Structures are given as structure tokens and as C-alpha cells.
Length: 192
Image 1: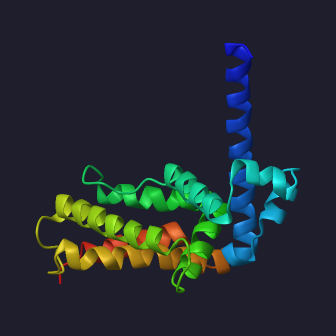
Image 2: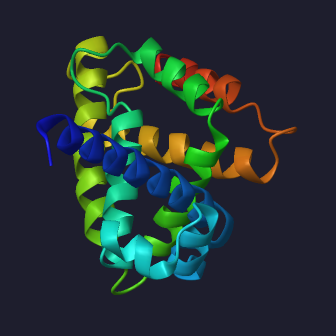
């Protein structure tokens, strides 16, 4: 096999892996992780289950790829962010319901004992709370106008973001996710 043929084969393999991950995102969004089967994902991309196992040898390996893909699309706040950019992130999330649905389904299931995404979400929430506290500290200093510290407020901020996602997924016509989040940011800045 020539160098060019080898490169083309790698590109095709990477494209196929991406196609499988996108299909897995869709199937998980529809059925949840426990209800999603490798067979359903394989069928969606026109492979046999055995063919899918060539790319992802286990369902857990596919889940890891789905979570890694989602993390590439989702910006986790860091200290360089401003609080008003969080509202932009919520607006961006409102434009990608399938990703939010997949995340929400996996998050909900991950609280059960032995779920393969449990450690991922526990670590992610530790990182996100820390990032949110840094964003709040950069905006308000060591105390927000309501008197709370950034560390005390960060879990509330994350809870509002995730809770709004669930409400929006259940009733997108009635829940203005970006508007409600901007209202919450207004509450953060009010004097206590």
C-alpha cells in the first residue's frame, strides 16, 4: 500500500468513526444510554454490529467517544470568560437540541450505580464548578453583590444552566432558556 493509499484509508476511517459517533448521539438522545444498542447505531450508519465493533470494540468505548465529541463542541468556562459570555453559551445551546438532549439523557442515567459515564460527569462537574467560580470571581471579586462567595454561587449557576436545559427540552415553546438565564444573571448582580 502506498503512502497516499494509507492516508486515504485513515481519512475514511476517521470519517466513519465520526459518522458512528453522530449516530450514537442521535440514538442516545432518543433512547438513553441503556436503551441504545450497538445494533441500532450500526443500522443507522449502514453497518453490521460486527462492522461497528471494528471501530468501537465495546458500548462503553463508544460512550467515551460520544462524551469526548460533546466536550469538543461545548466550551467549559475558564477564568478568561466574562459572565455575559455565559448567556451566549446558553443561547448557543438552544441552537443544538440533539446535543443537549444526549447530554441530559446521559447525565440523568449517570447518577445510577455502575453507569459508565458516572466518573466522567463527577469529574466534569468539579471542573465546571471551579471554572464558574473563577468567572464569578473575575466579575465580582471575592463577594457577589448578594454577599455570597463565588464558590457558594458556582453550584447554583451550574444548576440553573442544567435545570433550564431539562425544562426547555420538555417544553421549548414555554421555556425561554436564554431569557431565563439572563434573568438569573440579573439576580446575581443585585444587592443582597
